[in-house]
Amino acid sequence: MSPAQSGTRENADSCTMVVFGASGDLTKRKLIPALYNLSVEQRLPAGFSLLGYGRSEISDEEFRRKMREAVKEFSRPRVENEPAWGSFAHGLYYLAGDYEESKGYLRLKEFLAKIDRERSNRGNRIFYLATPPDLYAPVIQRISAAGLAGKGARDAGWTRIVIEKPFGSDLESARALNRELHEVFDEEQVYRIDHYLGKETVQNILVFRFGNAVFEPIWNRRYVDHVQITAAESVGVEGRGGYYEKAGATRDMFQNHLLQLLCLTAMEPPISFAGDAVRDEKVKVLRSVRSIASQELAQVAVRGQYGQGLLGGQKVRAYREEPGVAPDSTTETYAAVKFFIDNWRWEGVPFYLRSGKRLPERVTEIAIQFRRPPLLLFNACPVEPVSPNVLRLRIQPDEGIALTFEVKSPGPDICVSSLSLDFNYQAAFGLSPPDAYETLLIDCIRGDSTLFTRHDWVELAWSLITPLLRGWESTLPNFSNYEAGTWGPEEADALIESDGRRWRRP
Image (cartoon, rainbow, N blue to C red; front, side, top):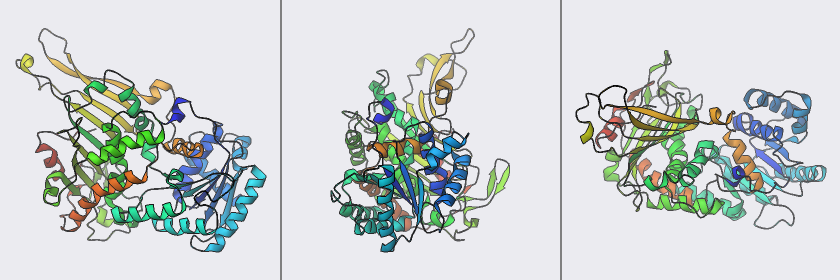
């Protein structure tokens, strides 16, 4: 949990956010709706401004009109009256320019100075890179060349930069991007965003663990049998075949989202909820994760690609039939990996991670399965064996926490049944949790980096994932190997069943 949720942070300074890639889907679907929601709730600082930068030649008014349509479609509260929108839109601007030509950045510098004068933003700036990854380095270099950023170079105001995933495509490229960033920005100015970390249940993991005396004593190898972390999607590539061909499930989900969830589940208690205190503990977890040797790859990792199938009663096409996808593509749309954490708390406890597209349900959850109790008392009961207790942290779509436990069934015989204690955010608090981008954007504006990824974590994560990718590149997969609408390839079932366990079916 970031200090924002504990109510201990000071008000944020007014600032201008420059969004590179302002005409893209991320700006329309996530950034503008999230900022508008913050504005409606009066959580943005007075004078907050947003300057969209993109190649499209449009005016300020046209940009505002497009963003209003985006707010109507994607924000939580709808635009109910002119004053609500007008107050927010008054701080929206647009500047057309090329990402790789210096003259655009000189115009940007002049425009920012004008906004500072009109909106009293005192030179405080956030540069948000909502562009394709191949533009990250050119934009960073030209921001610096125009004198818009530098390590302590400016006399007034602060400067921060937000970078979307993917942060590199392997260990080497991630290190190169970190070097390019650190030539211009200090690490405390860099905010690598992972929207999973803004979700309420993800933030609540630490509170749940360390704020309840009943759970932390059993959160270890003595009581936990294994952990399953699932990120399942029912959709396909949704017209992003060209991007997905370069990424695949492992780069898209494991290096960032799933390893972040693993770290929050496995980390030791931090000394505080301050940014580096939490991130230090997550880095310690990654340093303890056992690396995957090439000769054991087949025993601990499985990949898959969906073929044709039925989903929701509708026939869906195979991945290789998607627009932008090669007809002989070897890109994985499913991956499952077994990790071990070689430290005192988790020695011998497997962490099973899986993610895939075109699975039966859209669901992300962490399931902690505890060891079974001795069964001698229940041997005479003519029912299924006693089920282990499972604690489920539901991250999406129905955010909440559930704990299954055993009770006696009604009747004269001593027989057991499984029941569940279930906590749902919307039912408990009477409202839906805020969008993850709302949390992360206001944290960045306030200068709280707790929920953002640090450079050493990024490189450690890639050091675990890159050998897996290299190993797969050296072998030819047998694709497609699972039907759309199923829970993945048979090899994934064999991976966990060889340990005497089974995948959960959320």
